[in-house]
Length: 227
Image (cartoon, rainbow, N blue to C red; front, side):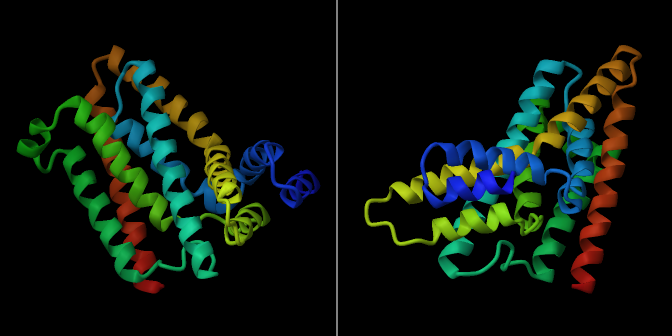
């Protein structure tokens, strides 16, 4: 896998796109990526729909926002000559923790008036995208050889701009490949939600998602406090 990737990296062209995606898939089993699985489970459970089609749209939105955040962060880091996640500070962890805390409280029913004011579409798309952007910012994906290689490509002098464009698309595809487990666990959660809804237990699934968001919030505060 790595030999194919670096061979494509030496002569940047369309094979690098495939190599980047497969490199992302290979990186999806890294602990720092597996650690994000509870996020997609909580988002689908808390803000999802019992309709499986909408669940797939929700997962695609989450993956797209996450990949876009990783791409922009990687390019910014490349221009600074630093590793992805150099901007991470305790304050940032606290802010994301506060966001997840509010959303968790919303879903467990502590803010009933606010919860009733949000439509199903606002929860499904708006809150899902918001969580994906926030978590993507603080996730600091593993500094794999694949991402490091793509960042070095993005940092090269490129008068014409073609290498920069190729590096942007490659990093995005790498992030999409790294999100393969989001689809697996998000789909399973969507199927469970469908079963719960058939038994009139939709609110139970939402509250379980809210509890998981509260746990993730506590984790962000913990990391921010000790980082």
